Image (cartoon, rainbow, N blue to C red):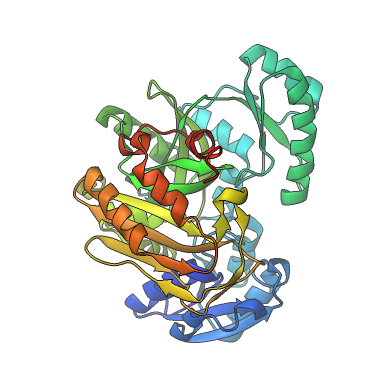
Length: 450
């Protein structure tokens, strides 16, 4: 087992990893940019090293600076968290070339799954259902129009190297497809330095359901069941829960087994998530694999009792996966609300600034993952996530009630946050009945200004 690990991230996920290391008796070395030099969680690390200026490109995305910090700190491994360099196969290989273990999958598996076109091909070979679409990248808008004529409108344009909704457009006719294709390419080139695009049939009013995976370096792979992430705005998740409501036991089992087949085909180890779209008939289609720990991993931890971050560390250290599939059960219902410093009534505009009042919720079944506190400055340089508020209760109805209570208790001032929106979601009859899809937020709350 490792004795020293570098935590190559910031905010709540850095704190989450530091806590996991401390629980395992491992020294955690934090890194920070100048914008985060006063972050309270740095005091919980064994040591902390500055890696550069405020901008991510000069700090948390600076592979050379992070590797230099790792060498100075004499660590055996680097945990990248999520975002930044977490899914960068070049960085993963650089770590291993420097004889420092990267806590995540192999660079080869990341490359196979990180490119959406290659991932679709691998899914097809593993007999995992995929959305009808292009067999490879689409080079021109003329090719896109010809393909759309075959599979039918509406279609989705997606960046082959994409994620987080960037380089993604919907088209309902030829004129929209041509203009959207050009805009998507420009956005993909700016975001990923790769303008490659592919086309998929648009599944209308789908649910977004993902399967949590764990695999060791000896070929053992299991799933930790599914999470429903259908409540989104601009392809960014807002609410996650497990189990997914209104999915039958047979669909759940087929979905999870398909995710395991794909991970095995990719030679995957570490924690990862296989994402699917489900239509109204519960037919499911592979979407992508996130080769890292997810923001919403605590949802699965609550319903299974497994510590996913600790499993990542154990697997990276070469330990076998001692869990067996038949031993992993879903217990109760868990819901997570992402609390962001954003203004939902103003197109989710980020609201950086200093938090003067921070009163966290508590009580039975409540978990709060956060690095924020009274006096904390929400920086404009990074993601606006302040905290992840979770509840876990025996039934979904009880979990919804507990989340309503927790949201009422949670006070963050004076910044605008997504708390009012989450309150409205928890009260909405369709959410209470579990009848939501990926377009629910835009359809339901846009006119209300929430």
